[in-house]
Amino acid sequence: MEQIDKNFPFKKFRKMQYHLTRAQSSLLLQLRSGHIPLNAHLYRLKCADTDTCQACSTRRGASPAKEMVTHFLFDCTEYQYECHDLDKLLGCHNRDLEHIMSKQKYIRALLKYIGRTKRLKRSFGTITQQLDNDDA
Ligand SMILES: [Zn+2]
Image 1: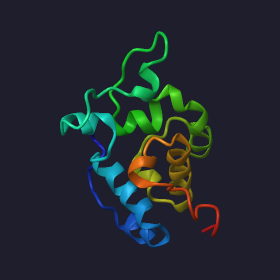
Image 2: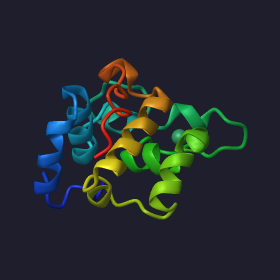
Image 3: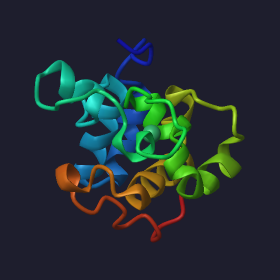
Image 4: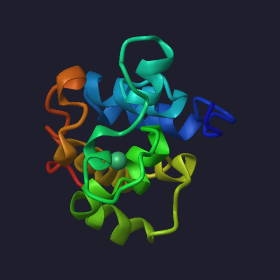
């Protein structure tokens, strides 16, 4: 189990949910809990044949990585390009979801990143709507 669930849900995040669509907010909550349709979780539920990340493990010379939340958000080499803006905003060593979910602009960057990867589109649809509107 990943160590990202220490004091969930956060007060600050609850406030921010009012600015999010239903899909966006359920996606973020699932990210926090780790119960999200990525292979590491699906495999545990016997809903996937493998727990490895299919996006990057097919690359030549790549060693298979478990597709956990942290891998998907921060480590997957296949999404380096999509991750660029998020890294720029957060600093590339910031992997603290609690910190990310404490600020509207970080949440937006995170959602945009996830939208760009299209990895969770089947489960959550287009999650980037309304992200470019109000700048809080
Ligand atoms: Zn990967």
